[in-house]
Image (cartoon, rainbow, N blue to C red; front, side):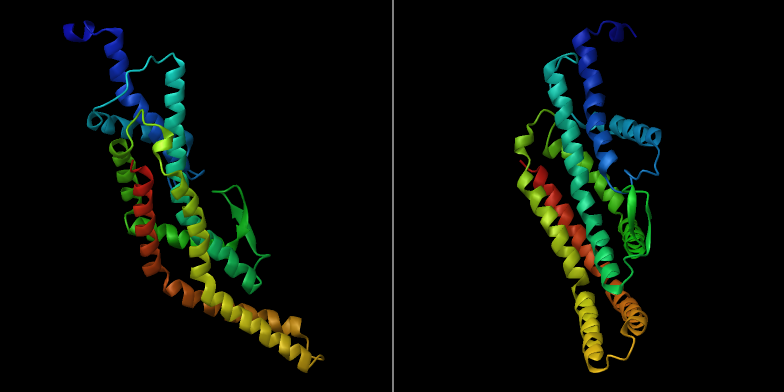
Length: 260
């Protein structure tokens, strides 16, 4: 007790910094990370989880910058931690963007673009097939312990990119490449189904030219929907193995972003 009373203001500030800076980074990351950053998870729960995780991380973080808490340097340091958390969560958002874009592409090709439902995560409406793909891949992500691996990567970030490091040390070009990768991966997942639906639509176009008296709209929509569901079933059957490859690639790329 006496040793605690003998601590100076600088010592107390250093002790508080061991918890505060990890809390700022982890809190910003949990705000953006999929599943943890879901709008259906209340703000107090996320803040409490970030505070508890920061308490567990604090003893493992040894080197902390000595900063006056009421200074411009502290404000810049807090901004850097928030930006790192946002970038970290944004990279993981690209993984879920792959399945969202895949569902939207398949819905448009099947003629289900009008079947929309409210998306509580993004705050807008999206095709129902996109929501089903999102739920499916979220369960896959949890079954692969992706949430635990994400938290491990977040804790390891304090060794790979310590508090006080400049944002310029991050490979921000890799983040931009991940955005293009997510679009390319979504197209690769849906390309067989898109080609199949293109052939179906081409067949109905030829049939309309050969027999104009047939009502292609009333006949074509059920057939397109039926072939579309078959294409979705064939596409989803191969998603688990491909999704594991996508998760491994993203985690390796995320580690490359943080490496100095």
